[in-house]
Structures are given as C-alpha cells and as structure tokens.
Image (cartoon, helix red, strand yellow):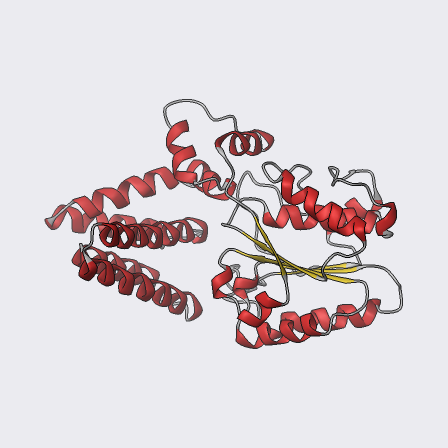
Length: 343
C-alpha cells in the first residue's frame, strides 16, 4: 500500500526494488537478531544523512519480517531479497497489503513532491491498520523521512507510537533527528547509520552501473560525503559544475560575479530543475555551516554568530519559497547576495 511517490534519481534504484545494501552490515545484523529474539522494539528510528541507504535498509528489514513472520524461525541475518518470492514482488510493485510507505505525495499539477507529509497522509496509516487488523500478519509502516511530517502529521504519528497495534512495526527514517518532536524520538529505538566509506560508496555506485574512473572520480568521492544520492547528483545532474560555479561566485567580485550569479540562478530555476535545486540548497547550507564552524574554531565569535544566523535564515527562506512556490530565481539571488555580504 503506497501512494504515488516522486521519481527516483536518474541512475538510482527505488529502495523497494534495490536488491543490495552496502556498508551497513552491523545495522543489518542488529535488526535481524533483535527480531529473532522476539523482543524487538515496535518503532525503530533509522538515522543518518540522506542517500546512504536508510530506506533500502527499511525495505530489506520489512522483506525479512514478512518473509519470516515467526521471529523464532527467522534467519540470523538479512539476506538479499529473493526476486522470485511473492513478498519481494509485492513490495517492489507497491502491492503489499502488509506495508505502507509514507512519503511526501506528488502534486498532480506541478509534478513536484509537496512540501510536507500531511495529516491526511498519516490518516492512511489509520485506515491501513484498520483494514488489516484481523489478518494476524505483521503490519509495517515506513515513514520516509519523518523530517517531512508537518506538525499535525507528527502529532498523529505520535499517537500511533504511543498505542501501537499488535504485531505492528514503525520504521521511522530521519536525516536530522534533532528536528523531530522529542516525544517521537523517545518512543523509538535509535539506529544510527554512518555515511558510506569510500569502498562501500564505490561498491554501491558499481551496483548501479557506475564505475568511477578518470580525473573527476576523486572529486566525486570527496564531494559526495559518503552519500550515493549526492554522488548521482554530481555525476548525472551536473553537480560538479554547479559546485564549481558556486565557488567562482563566492570568490568573484563586481559585474562578472553578478553575471555568474544570474547564470547559476537561471540553471537552478529552469524546467525540471528540482533535483539540482535541492542539491544547491544542501551545498549552500553546508557551506554556511562550515564557515560558522571555522569562525568558531578560530575564536571569531562575531563572525561565527553571523553565519549561524544566516544558516537559520536560509533554511527558513528555502522552506517558505518551496511551500508558497515563490520565484525561485529571486530566492537564489537573494541568498547568494546575503552570503557574499556575510563574507
């Protein structure tokens, strides 16, 4: 049971169809052994940066449980999903009656993912549990990610976590656990995933048919920060060029820098630019946080506070721009102006 979801990145595999996971053997072993013990927690908070495999791990664990509904008979490790099994086929096609995948729905008018997971989406979980209550099967809800829950939706999920139905499991994904309601975090078992190391990232990309080589390989590995999705944006969406243009703008002055700002803003606000805009948003936020840390380490408290305030402002303005569909080019130009002023 799954709603229409945003398209996956070019070159990527949807988590429900991905047969391999790299770099998280300890987390897989922990989940398998916890389930086998019969004492597993009803809600697991899978934490870690975006694009490192949290959703793939959640679907692998769901496949494991639904394939072995009796914990005592379950294997001690998670195996790669069997493509011939009914459970795997149902999960891959979104036709499983025992799993609900909650994510931001797609706006039919714009084709873009909406700004949040709303309470209407969460109500689907209530119907899901009601429709399957008499089957005796495991019922699994994957919230992907919980960071996208708006306030009402978060409160609705909290009520379910406080009184979970029998034989239910919540797999709650988060890129930034500090942004979640403390009451949601307190009702979940935290499971922290680390960014992929270089070997695991190379293996994950090779699984997708991308064998890194050539002069840009090291740049991609360094800039991806252990994230498969970031690597795909760098390789398939012009992310390396965007990052280079951003650096040139920050280093430049005068009319030439202004011209480059407009060129970059045009690219980021063009048709079908959602993915690369998200990439730039992360790049911008990350650079400002880096500048704040560097200033703090150097003992320049005033400069550190200036960048910290700018970091908070950027996040809010990007959220407002997305929520109200504001002119993206003007938002980008304004943010770049503020960053250059702060520098």
